[in-house]
Length: 172
Image 1 (cartoon, helix red, strand yellow):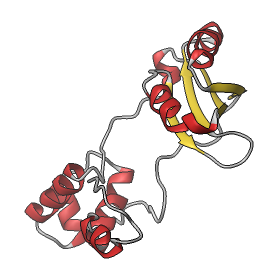
Image 2: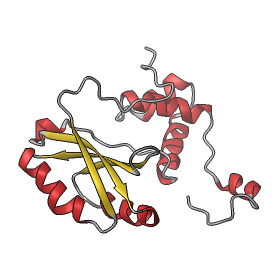
Image 3: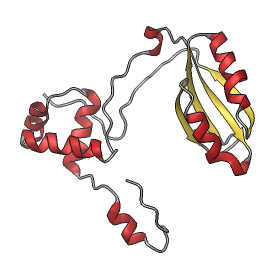
């Protein structure tokens, strides 16, 4: 939900417009972080709520854009064997414009603005080293406003998790 208001002068109004997530919603998210296909009946049983309540809450969080349930595959299993992080420096007055353009590139899985030496950091997954080089030279570095990039190839993954916060395995 996007609300275009002046945050400092309309703080109360802005806070009212934010989707509210309560402890039951947080518990549902915790369960779904371990099994995104967990049936509503099982969620309801584990949390002591009705199946319809579990379904309504998941559907509402999804509709509000607060929750996204997706299938995640290991890129290497699909033939995408070259991954890296790229630090990107951008002309100061073009950060949002450049970020929007980079976000459209299919090789980019994550893009975030950072503090420090770089303005943006991107996680990129490519089919092979040649594809990675082509991505850098023919796509990323040709975007107007990009002034410098530094690549960090991922040599070995030690952990991959989409669980955060207080995610805990479901209690049996």
